[in-house]
Amino acid sequence: MALRFDPRHTDVAVALRRSRIDGYGVFAQQPIRAGQRLGQLTGESITVAEARRRAQGGGRLMLVELSPARAIDASRSQDALRFTNHSCEPNARIQVEDGEVQFLALRDIADGEELTVDYGLTHHEGRLPCQCGAPGCRHWL
Image (cartoon, rainbow, N blue to C red):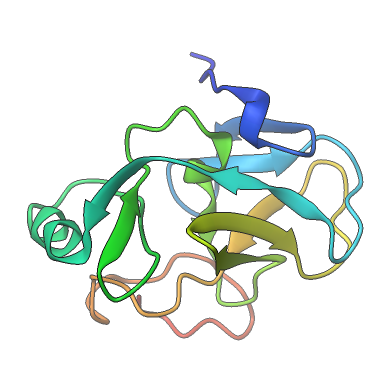
């Protein structure tokens, strides 16, 4: 089954497919230059307190805190970038600026390579085993 996404918030050509890291992932469909913007993540604007409440419920979530008070829940978003998996040695990063969540390439990314970011501190609080497989893997999220 092919996943569908709305390409309006993606600045580069990507495909969604099964990932060796976890579930589905986002894969470059073109070469990407270091520093290039990959796109933007959108979703439901919620309070951080609500984001933390939702995180306690379990299940797959894509929450990004924008400030000490506001967060975005992209769990039901049609943005391809909500499928970006974690890696302890990522090729992209998340930048939060003026209430927007942007993804930027940290290095050149090859056509066909999975896009990954370091989730950093998460609601898992070091209890979820990391599956990134990177040589420098921290083993937990």
